[in-house]
Amino acid sequence: MSYRDAVMAAKYAGGSNEQATALHEHRLETIIGGDGYFDFGAQRGIVVHIVPDAVYDDGYAIDLAEHSILPEANPARPTQLPVLGNREGARGMWTADGFGACVERESGGEHDGDCVGYAHLFSNGVVESVSALPFGEPWSDDESLDGRTLEIEMTSCVRRYLRVLAYHQQMSPIHVALTMYGVGGKLLNADESVRSDDGGRIGESTLAPFPVSLSNFDADVRAELADPIDALWRGAGYPGSPFFDNGEWSLRSAYDNER
Image (cartoon, rainbow, N blue to C red; front, side, top):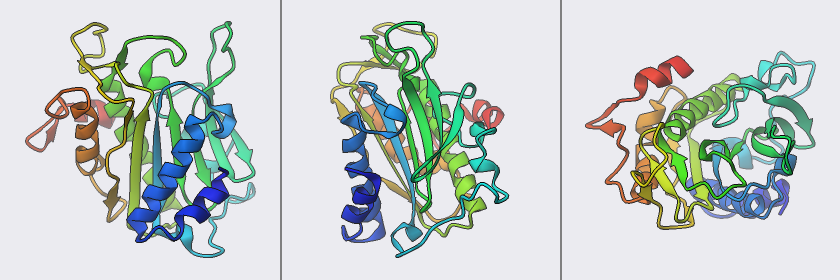
């Protein structure tokens, strides 16, 4: 299903939260099927959509013209639209539907040059973030996923995407939907240096928490995403995120440095 088809299929799904969920589900199916942007085809990854309410207004579009004052859509500055799990090496490019930043694998092997993650800003204001990078080698049978990196990167990237949408004067609420797929039987570790059975084993192939709605662009992203992030950890047998306790996030200093 093309992006435009996914938007139209989700348009009549109900309220704005239901529409965002439907768009995410349609795009997820396409991405898992190997038809994502930039030929992304990793066997496991995380898909995040940031969906403003204005997406379904007929004829609505943000200005992504190359001549506009728009650092987020400058191919020379692709990190303005960060790829989840990667701070360096992204290249920016225009597509028929907007602008994207893509990270390619450099291994010298069979998958050299394959896309391992991208972020895409659509002309109607949706941000699609797709990445296998937090999961190590996306084409291997590696058992472990780095939960610490996943949590820091997801928080910092979603915050940056919100800043991009604020730059374009998008209106709230903004809906955030995320899914991890292809992760059944893998170990979600709380310690980035540990690659062993010390992690929790994920029981489902696909983890898709309910989406959340943000009422403004200045929201505390980690606090707002607490429920879906906790759901990912619970999918691996943890009681919740080991980095968030009594309203305090132990990785905040690292997150502040990252952004």
